[in-house]
Structure formats: structure tokens, C-alpha cells
Image 1 (cartoon, rainbow, N blue to C red):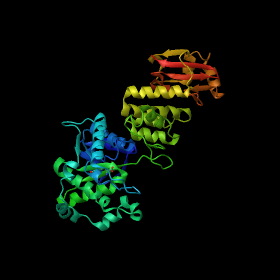
Image 2 (cartoon, protein in one colour):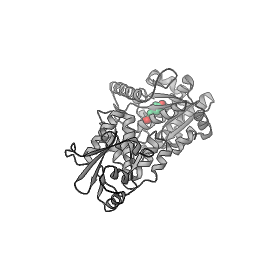
Image 3 (cartoon, protein in one colour):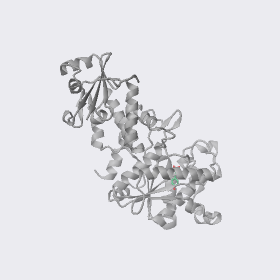
Image 4 (cartoon, protein in one colour):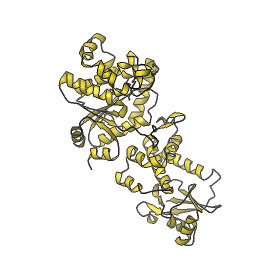
Length: 408
Ligand SMILES: N[C@@H](Cc1ccc(O)cc1)C(=O)O
């Protein structure tokens, strides 16, 4: 499967200017592309995370990413898809937020010589001269077309300030600048960025007579059509001081059944074959899929240690928070697993909770078995190596018998 095919199969691609050209360049590992990040808060969130993952996927296929921090565009504020005006940020806040973004991104993407590049558009946008810019770039834009742009739709009734109206010009200028100075001919971003990105390709065509490309990634919506990565408390942040690794883990552990597979495909780096396998899972197995999703994402964002801690804390909560330190336990070895998992019937037998698999089956069918606080409904439920590692899993037989199973 080519890199582009994989992006498609994961459901990541929303719109492209020229599929043939883009897929060719990406698959050959020849693309130099950029994604812009406006410093609207002091931490990145899940939407940014998707963009960073895309960078990483393309970087792994040999392409060169440029992360543009919007120290300049942040001074204007992107009205795309918003129903009201953003509060204007002070230059100090913008600077602080840029610093926070930079630190978080560096944990995630490899920057440096021959790797990814990070630039700040303040470096070129802040120097622009108004009259010069109007003559040079302003002349290339049609106000009529701009007013029709999808991204301003919501603002046509409520009002759009002249400040924000200029945002598209700033982002288009970035693309034009990076095209000329960094050999960058592709821009990627969230689907709400489509109009801004086309502004850039159009400017490049007008000024230089050359082709540049744009591609957007699908917005992550849940089965009800709502944006994911948000809680009642607000965004799910990547900064552990704003959203703790445990809260982060729990957000993904508690998503709807209908959304697990989509999230696994779009957000994790697990091989597609492995995810397709999970497509057949149902009932209690979906909880296993959610655990895998939560673990994978927490690990990507906060590291393995934190992911394990969050997973253990979540499990402890499930079994009721009582003192579980004296619960009998069984240590499994790799020999007990086939393809990285052991079936629930075998596991119960191994733990001597039942005299036979037949009895285990009967108990499950009667609804008398729980795995980490969830009733087991399928006698074929697999228990994976990941679940068995760390604190392991807690089995509950009937009302009182607890047993922990861990892998050595
Ligand atoms: N407008 C983008 C950020 C961005 C900034 C500058 C660019 O050149 C490109 C994109 C956003 O709000 O997400």
C-alpha cells in the first residue's frame, strides 16, 4: 500500500486540488509541504495532534515537513468557520503561546538539518509594508470571490471585521513566501482551511505562473456529527498540566462504540490490518478496542510510562477502588498467548477459576463473569498482551471471587 493509499484508507483525506500530482509526490517521498498552527492558546489540542500525526506519517515516507507557527497570522486571527470574532490577543500572549507550541511540537516531530523545519511567519509577515502589499498581493484577490468563500459563510450575517477579512491574504502570502524561499509546493491543514489554502495556490499561479497544491484532512466528528476532542470543560489539551494524562486516557476510553474504529484508523499508527481485524469486534470487545485506542494515544502524547499509569488508574477505578492488593493472582507467560492474546475461557482455566472451559462458558453465558469491571458477554473475548501487562486484568467470578491475571 502506498503512503497516499494509506492516508485514504485511514479516512484522513477530505479535499485535494490534484490527486494525481499530490499522491505521486507523496509516494515518491519528494514533497515539501507545510502546515500552519496559529498560537490561539498556550497548548496544542487534539485537532493539532491530527495535523502533527499527518506530518509524522509523511515524514516517515521520506517527505519534508515545515511547521509554520503563526506568530504573524495570530496577530490577525482566522475567522474560518467561526461564528463570532476572536478576542484580539496581545503580542505578549502570542509570543508565550508560540513558545508553548514550539516545545510541544519538538516532543513529537524530529526537527533539524535534513529533517522537519519549524518557522514562524512573524519573521516575514511583520515586516510587510501596507501599500507595497496592497499593490503586490492585494491586486490579485477578488473581493467578490472572497466574500463568497465557504469559510466566511457564518460571518456574513453576524459581521466580519476588516482585520479578520485580511486573514486569507496573510495565509496566502505565507504559501507564496514558502514556495519561493523553501521550495514548498504543498499545504495541508484541517478541512476548514480549504479556502485559505486555495487563496495561496491562486496567488502562486497569478504571481509566478506555477502550480502549488493543497490537501485537507477530515475533521474528526463523532457519530452524532459533533467535533471530537472536546469535553464540557472545553478542549482536550496535549499539555499534561491542562488535561492530565489520566483525563486524556479516559476521554478516549469513554468514547462511543460507533467511533472507536474511526479513531483508531485516523489517530493511531497501528497497522491497518490490525485495526481491520478489530472491525469484527463487538460487545465487551469494543471496550478492549477503546483501551487500545486510549493507551496508544496517551503513549503518543505523554509517553509509555504515563500511558501505563493512566491505564492502571482506570482499571483500579473499574474494580471499585477497594483494597485489591490481596487478590490472588496468576502470572502468565508468553507461551500462554497465541497471536498476542489468550481467550477468556482459557484464561479462566489457567487462573483455576473454573474446573473446565465448559464451566467457564456456562458462567459467561449466565452473565457471571466480569473483566475489569465489564460484564463478559462473548465466550470468545480475547484478552491481549497489552491488557495483561502492567497491573494486568481483574477477573470477577460471581459476586465475590476476584482474581488478577498478569503477564510476566
Ligand atoms: N489558519 C490556520 C493556521 C495557519 C496559519 C498560517 C498559515 O500559513 C497556514 C495556516 C488555522 O487557523 O488553523
